[in-house]
Amino acid sequence: MVAPEPHVPLSAVGLRLTDEVGHAVLDWVAAGDLSLSAALDQHVAAVRAALAACEPEEPGSARLAGQAAHERARSRVALPHHARRRGAATRLEPDAASGPGAVSSATAETACPDVPFTDSASQPDAAPLPLRLLLHYACGFVEAAVRADWWPGEGEAAAGTADFESVRLAAVCRLIGHTAAAAALPPELR
Image 1 (cartoon, one colour):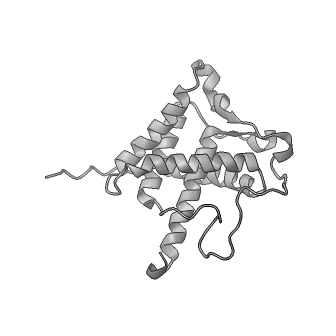
Image 2: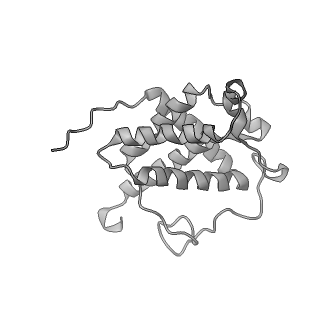
């Protein structure tokens, strides 16, 4: 007999940071920053991969996956502790032509109006992840990031940069949006 996993509470602060920071980056991507869009796609894939091994009944494993994702990212950058403050070690720098608000004639994805409920013509929608796992992943990731002295940068958009943590939180927000949209569909269309 398997013992049930103990209740793991969600952090209201962690969820609020995820929402605020994640949606700010998503707005930036929507404004046409193609390099940030590509980074976001990679983060979405990384979150999906991390949560693929988690059972929906085990939110603690999703929280640990979020913590481990941040710790792995930080361990790749061998800088002194003081140099890692505020995400300085993992900034993504877009090129000058694709800063915030710049609109390019190229698009990151090709819209597919002929196929309903598909975001991209080149890649079909993946199955939505359980909301519970996404929320616990976000909390674990934010907890690990804050413990490593990260806090969302106030001037990132003005400076034309986005840090690793902010893009990862945007990926979680995008996946939460996909899950919510799938839940709103009638069962015969899922």
